[in-house]
Length: 236
Length: 236
DNA sequence: ACAAAAACGAGAGCACTGCTCTTGCTTTGG
DNA sequence: CCAAAGCAAGAGCAGTGCTCTCGTTTTTGT
Image (cartoon, rainbow over all chains, first blue to last red; front, side):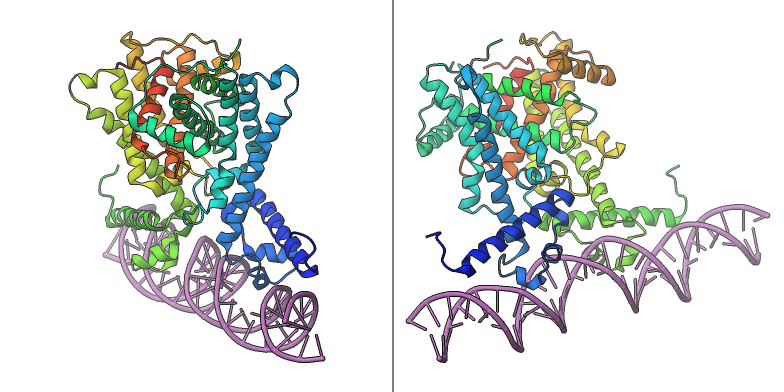
């Protein structure tokens, strides 16, 4: 169905992509606030009004960029996991670390796109299912690492008890995702997920200026601690 | 020196405050992106050009709002700590919890102002010392709670070793702040600080939609875990 | 006390923005 | 082959941040 349905359809796809590419360029240079439809149209040599045939509004363009960014980040994370070789590829702690560093590396390489998805929600809130789906990829990857560890019997379930409502949320999530993990682990995974991005946001948004200098070391250390909190064994 | 230096000076202060108040109003309604100088001037019944006598640019107004927001948050946090009564007021874990909940309560009550300070940096980066000073208040409060616990001998120093560069950062921070805490504790405090806002940002920016429903319980649980990670005893 | 200097408010104006509407042209499909 | 749909371009509207100028008012130095 994506076959050649005429030159027009193909052209539409290409132009849509060109618009997004140029918008991404301006985003990387000036940030989301300064992204201007007219400037994009100008750079592409088209009338600004023509652009509205492809994106009905500026917010729609931004939403498309957001989804792309989520997917790019998800892909970076997954590929960091996939490029592990040798015995490292099987050790849960190493997988966890690789995943987190993959996320961080992408964020450092694309700070404005990171800000777009994990900074303040720019277009008056919203979360179409396409967005949330793409947004979930990193979280799912984290769960995957822990699930594999659990299946291999390499998980040390935390002893601390959890309040009932938290357990309920964790169970609901586990059921929805069809993943078999103890509620305590799942709940801590959610926390670790949020905290991972807390660390990244502080680093990227300048909150660590004059506080943390050895950013990579600090990140690794913090992320190792998160791995422990979900029950992963972290040798050495 | 802040004495009455003429009606003009007093009027200037009042008008400056009125502008910020109206800007804050529009901020709370529409978010930072939609805040317009002209609209503020209109609401105040003055010409838009007159507003530039008080704030040289839109970014300067935003910066002022950012500083105010940091201070309001810092104040909310400190007062949550100060309003503890009875034996709770002495238990480090209770103080830690009260502090974190104070931060969360303020954030939930002022989501747009929270987004202004912990979302994407809106005006092309920047951090005048006045900003960083106000921004540090919550972090300092967290440190204070742990310092007191340490002084009272109620701190269980974590055993896990830290990489040297991280230790160095922690020592430098401790020296700069003149606070006597083990490097391992200080390093974990920085992590806990970042993670606290990671949790809040995820909650406020909608990342927990359809994932975590029992937000307050979840927050409490996560923040308790953070307290443990810095060495605080958490009874029950 | 008076004149010079500084601060102020208002208005007009510039360059820019997102977005709409209308007018012609081109591709598509029955 | 021709009507219908898709498309690009231009003009135009309302709004924005910001600058400049021009009278007026307040402060300040002598």
